[in-house]
Length: 171
Ligand SMILES: [Zn+2]
Image (cartoon, rainbow, N blue to C red; front, side):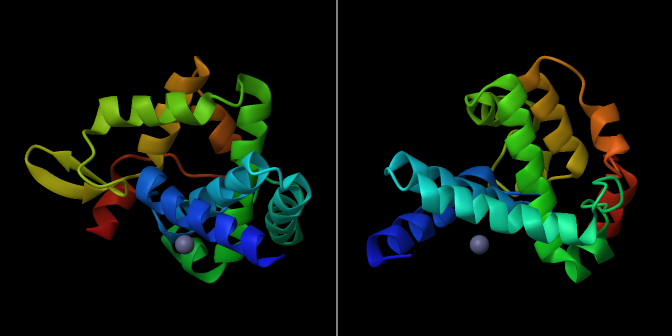
């Protein structure tokens, strides 16, 4: 990557963190990397953007060839297999944009903000208290953006979609 490409990717990555947040480190890094790739593509660096996405998806497939094993929502998996988890979330975003349109992330953000009253993109305010977002918050907002319930699809990918148990462990 040249200097300009690197700068665009880094800026996109950091805007991704500010804008999209995430329920854990892997999801947050994945959103950031995905927006970094989007920024590259928007700047005309389509080959670099494609290569970035493909690198992450290769990390995911190396750890989870069938795509049904790696539970991104699991705290230990997030810590121990972060590159593969990031790749899986990037693959999920790529799949959902392919199926529901490239404007899905904008609809997702609008739905997320409507449901959880974000004070910070990685946290939500519930009954006056701040809490970390959960995988269920992401799935609920992605479902609203897609226009259909994606909970079953996420579960078939081996991802725990739970708004209570795991969220409580993290507090
Ligand atoms: Zn980052």
